[in-house]
Amino acid sequence: MNKSELVEVAAKEAGITKAAADKALSAIVAAVVKTVAKGESVTLVGFGTFKSAKRAARTGKNPKTGATLKIPATTVPKFTAGTAFKAAVAAKKTAAKKK
Image (cartoon, rainbow, N blue to C red):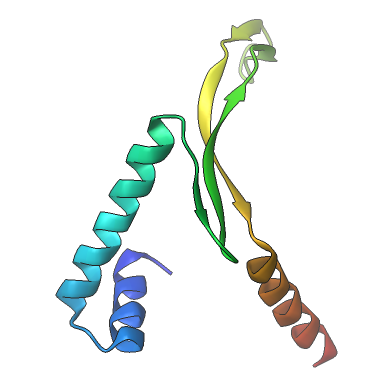
């Protein structure tokens, strides 16, 4: 599902226009990005937590040449799924396996 499909579903579920749903989704995404970029976390109870994580420096290999190279430490975004989200996905997989 891409953004436009998500906007369409959200608009239908909430009974609002696609334009309003698109504006709301864009505002939410911008707020999450801004907050996580500041080093804070965003928790949506039952859905999950968006946060930043530090990735340590490490040694890697160039796949073409095989030469070793140093990969510097960096900060990356991270999402951890919430309990309700995990349960919903697990229930869907279990139902699909039974068929």
